[in-house]
Length: 119
Image (tube, rainbow, N blue to C red; front, side):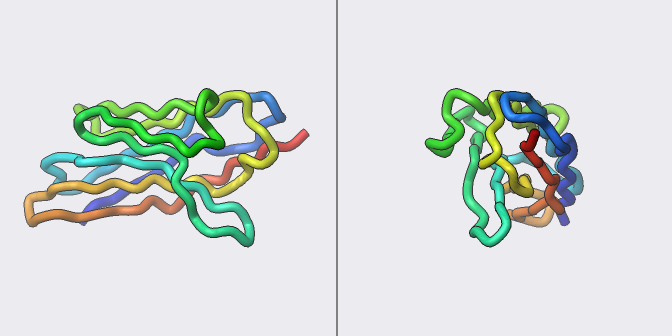
């Protein structure tokens, strides 16, 4: 089993910054990819950014130049640095991991952390 816990959400004014963290735990041997997704009220969950074990990064067009994804493989932890935040960034942000564990391939989702961008 893989446990995923996000933290760092909160209320921030437009133009502000937040740093989200994602900690994965369990019988993890390797993390193939770690991604951040967001879901705004009434909308589907969508990819914000992801990073592979090899360091390949993908960003949604809406966050390019404003958000930065990174990971600390030694700690099974990932981060999403969010800058120049806009009201339309308001959403619950979820971390997703694709892992190899002692018992095989497993994916995990966190419970989400709410980001509210408002003045």
